[in-house]
Amino acid sequence: MAPEARYDLAALRARLPGIRFEDNPALVRQKSRDFYWYSPTLKRQLDAVSADLVAFATSEDEVLDILRACYALRIPVTPRGAGTGNYGQAMPLAGGIVLDLSGLDKVLEIGPGRVRAQAGAILADIDIACAASGQELRLHPSTYRTASLGGFIAGGSGGVGSITWGGLRDLGNIIALTIATMEAEPRVLELTGDEVSKVAHAYGTNGIILSAEVPLAPRYEWVDIIVGFEEFGAAAAYANALGEQDAILKKLLSVIAAPIPQTYFLRHRTYLPDGRHVVLATIAPMALAAFDAFTARHGGQVLLRSDQLAPEEAKGLPPLYELTWNHTTLRALRIDPSITYLQVLYPFPNQLDLVARIHAALGDEVPAHLEFVRFDGKVTCFGLPLVRYSTEARLEEIVALHETMGAPIFNPHRYTLEEGGMKQTDATHLAFKRDADPAGLLNPGKMIAWDHPDFDFGSGRTYLFAGLKD
Image (cartoon, rainbow, N blue to C red):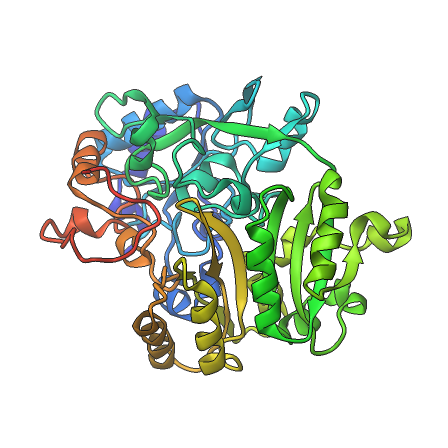
């Protein structure tokens, strides 16, 4: 069915004469997708998804005008930042419009320990603006140079910095959110404290993020270091112990099993001996002597230190964070398109034993990739292991094996909030959705509890974003 038959786009344009629209099918399709193709399951399910139109907002008032008009015409709206998500978060399942927020890119205010910026501001640009005050963002994803602040909050969970500061789920890592509701007359709401979890990691289903205030940390000239180990267990144990060294200030702590680094980290290949499992660490300069002593104590071999590279050596190397988190998956996919991945939690305090048992069972088929973080204040690790994909049935078996062994899966092969396991939709969230989006026009299809009111809130799943009912 042609898009014009689904929604009255001509009437929408007539109501919004000052708004820039894009209706070129190729460009609309491009703006309707993210990195969903990391998952062969999502690629099959979502490949044909496209909006009917893209609307570009350049101010908060324009966002409100677009929402008001779309509500009157019952046209669905799916917000989009930079499109760096991996689970179809910003893909418009019901068509309608994609609301491109990249024009809301201003850093609004910088103060001691905090910054407020519009939703479309790129994270790296925010840090550039904060540098003069000697501050930087606490947390960012591996897509730091391209991801937007609003997109990170609406679709992300943590990343670089989580070894020190925890994740976006932790109270204090989002100070405030300014959002717009989807109503006949949209409201602008300011959320703080517990209320921010109504909208954080909700894919824009509960409101359009206009701006956010987040905390800052002192800025350092961080040093990237690669440490090699002959045994994977030794690498994991070292990283776990280093994570517990609070006086050694760090921003990144990743463990990647051979042969992933040697096969996929092409620009670092000369620093990666065959068979070595590697720990990637980003360390503050004043902690380097302590780091060296700690590493020697654990028998690690330093393979690379960014502060000791000649300028010509350093020039061609990406920062280490672009080898970690989901950039590991991306680098593998560029060489082997059959690769996919999982997202795993290894719960404290048995994380190292659980990692060892799963690696022993699946190591060749599911080579290990660990990201050490603070989770509920305890040092543990998430896994983003690569999967040598064969069939969807086998992928489900691998998921089930992890969960049977006690490692919850946040499933990146699902596009709904609840199935991904990173958002608990409880009665409080559902009530907020009914208040902020009474017609269900915001990113429809992503929230099971909205479409199926009998959804079991007490399913016992582990969630990164806990509910508010307690």
